[in-house]
Image (tube, rainbow, N blue to C red; front, side, top):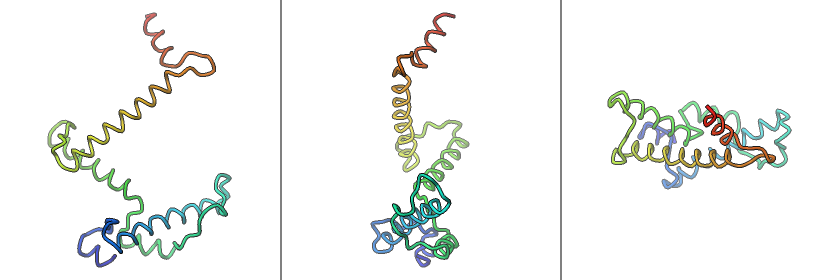
Length: 148
């Protein structure tokens, strides 16, 4: 992994680049289990340590990986990276209407818009449902607006 980082400038080895990519993914899985064990030891009533698979991750291994810049949450890391790219795009263009043809940033912006539409639709659907026979918040807002 250290040689890979020296060559590429990061530790985010694609899973398809076996065997190192598989090993990197395993470290992320083991880290997640490690965190669950830590949470269980903290007497979290939701997490039972017996229900969590054992992990080979240790504080020493975690520290060694972090020392070379290992990214535990790759998806979160990539989201932040694309967000910073969007901020740079906006600073240069005074808007956030990134065309799909703008490579990975364009694809990312399109995905964010798609995910927002799904979220908004689910939220609107939830608002439209009646709760305990009472009118939904959306219906109440419409009623208030039409009275004024």
